[in-house]
Amino acid sequence: MISSKGLTIQQLRSFVAVADEQQFTAAAEILNLAQPSISAQIRLLERALGTPLFQRSHRPVKLTYAGIELLPLARQVLRSVDNVVHGVSEVEALRRGHVTVGATPSLASTLLPSALARFHRNYPGVSTTIVERDSVDLLEELESAALDLALVIMPVPRPTLDSVVLAIEQLVVVVAQDHPLAKRTRISISDLDGVPMIMFREGYDLRSATFDAFTRAGISVTVALDGAEMGSVLSLVAANLGAAIVPSIVATDDRSVKVLHLRSPALERTISLVRPLHHTPSRAAEALSKEITTFLSENRWPKSASLDLRLIHA
Image 1 (cartoon, rainbow, N blue to C red):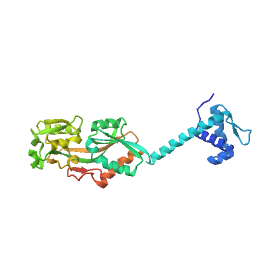
Image 2 (cartoon, rainbow, N blue to C red):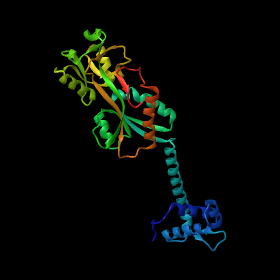
Image 3 (tube, rainbow, N blue to C red):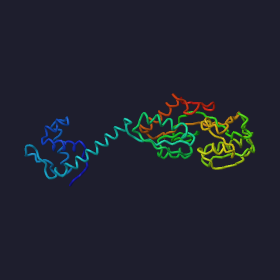
């Protein structure tokens, strides 16, 4: 009876070496093993397969019919093993690999592109998948191991995740250049009482932050347009469809809108890099995490420096 129990790669390597060299001594020299060790490996393989593989009475040794059948199969197995070992080595050396990174829309359009450009210059063989979601969805995907790491907005009240605070950012109000508030540079939330507002769609951290700020100020939001996305909100504001509360990193360089800073109490959000706590990160994920924090340390934020952004991990 043939059994794969106890069958090892070393046995197959010994078998192929003896088959190629047609003698045990030469095979032992090639594999840098003692000749008795080669003989023992072949005996174990024959025992596992239940049949002799060599005609030992011949000099040089010859394969039995079973050995002839096994040889191409053994070569195929060894090639596959070598490919796996080589592939793992390439991944460990970051010549190959893959990393999946998530980010909120505002961070996907500001920090992530510059950090990824630097990452791919340093590790051109590592491919990347980007997942753009709101923070809650990103945290869930981190917990399910669908993501290697993510740029999210705190808080992260989940014991299964590890977070590093990157920056504290103030939110700002943006209005059209000909909006009644455009003549001012600083306002209070109460100044937005009755002002038509453009609201982000459900799921955005900014949507809840806006409603919470209005509630604390004792006023209600006048919704002019609902369901906006980060990529369209500034254009909607520029068209004078309403004001909006947005991250300062998004509005800093856009001259189509007027940026109004909020008087105390200012609205702040915490930008963090988050990874699964109990999941060993791949070399690629570790490298990208380091690349993001190093990029901030050496280059500050990729857009124009904002008075409303305070880097923490830099």
